[in-house]
Image 1 (cartoon, rainbow, N blue to C red):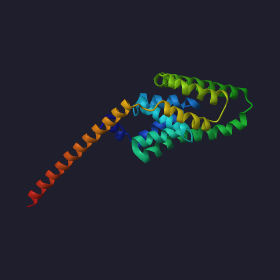
Image 2: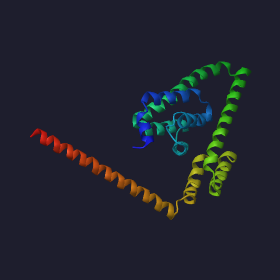
Image 3: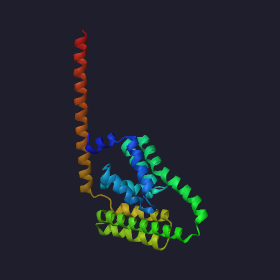
Image 4: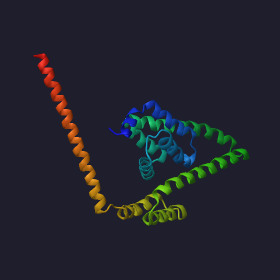
Length: 224
């Protein structure tokens, strides 16, 4: 069993709920990506960079809030269905409570210039956090011309021309898959790794079966 599998098995539901509750209570706006990375990768070490980016990519492309989607993915990876429930509950409760309270207060103080100044400050902080995590992720993922060939059109279509994300994904996703498809050498290496893994797994099962057979034989001799 790998180190990562052992760590995942040892994560309690209470711990999972508590970490996501803290993220949900302390993150602001789009800056939640930076908080997720800090806690899941750097502090708790529940995910490495590759698995975090995979969860982030899925969370960004499927319907729903990205942070909620990521919490479901991570919770499921660590503790299955119960982990997903614990993570998404912890992630959403703080925001729901705070938004409800702030909504009541905002209707009363929305014309107060000090309230506007606070909201502007929070917005600026969220932009800074988004920029920081964009640079961190970009340095790792954007390495080849093919990455720029997808990034620039996506940015222009969504950010500049304000086209909905869904049609942009429908058009660019097949192109990105085609451009980044593995070559024959990479596929051969993958299949070789899979064959080696399954061979080791079969050996392990045979070893376990032999131990169980020996234990059953000893039990039978003792009973007789």
